Amino acid sequence: MYKKNSNVYLSKVGFQTMRTCSTIPERNSSCENEEKDEDMFISDIKNPFEPAQRVCILCKYKIPLDYKNPKLLSQFISPYTGFIYEKHITGLCEEQQKRLCRAITLSRRLGYMPKLLKAAKYLKDPKLFDPFSPSRPNPF
Image (cartoon, rainbow, N blue to C red; front, side):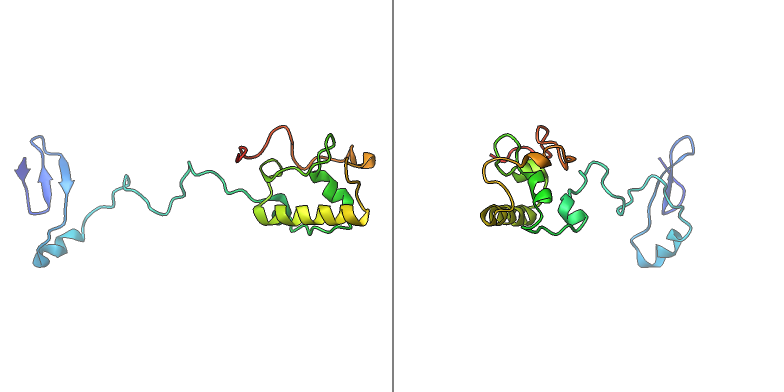
């Protein structure tokens, strides 16, 4: 390699191969005319391989859970067994799942919802999620 000046090196055929700034304080003025490299890493770009952050449907639309709303609460109950769906199936966050369980048990105790099965009048309601295709893998 042939040395042209202190901060630019030329290869044998005359192409620039490396551009560096001098570490000596009196030679730092030579870095001012450096071109910006278009292939440099940009640190503020979002990672394209990072999975999208999940937001539960109740938090996203700010839906309040109330024990007097059996139509909403019955969406989270299995029509076959009457059990409450787990959070990996419903896609709810931990806090909303706990509120849901408390609201359903209170609603069942006070007689708004049946205890063993889903009420027949709510069987044809639109689905908030697919119970046969969980949004997350089973944690157990």
